[in-house]
Image (cartoon, rainbow, N blue to C red; front, side, top):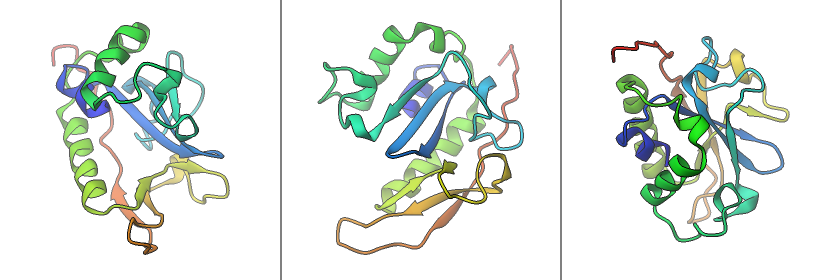
Length: 161
């Protein structure tokens, strides 16, 4: 969905993947993210929204999106979270490219999830030098070892971009 938002002109939207009893993803404007680790939100930031895998396909607790495509979710996100998207309109080709590459890796290596913060994960947050792609069981029953992916680029606010 985030990559769809990028394609729709909201390239200042970013995400922070983390684990806390379930896999979770915070979505917020780029300015919420750390200058040290641009995949990490160092504190509470408003506006932001969280998706949790515990809600399965009731994305953001929506009951009308169970079968939506990523594009349809992005369209609903724009309508339902205007405070977030208002701060996300702009170009950030470096981050959009980073995300496209990350998605390609995740598609080709099923069984991995990016995580920047989790209980008992050390290092995490601003101390990470790369984004861990944590290993989980693959569909064919293999357990993969962790892999690391470069941190995303820092946000460079350019009002003319």
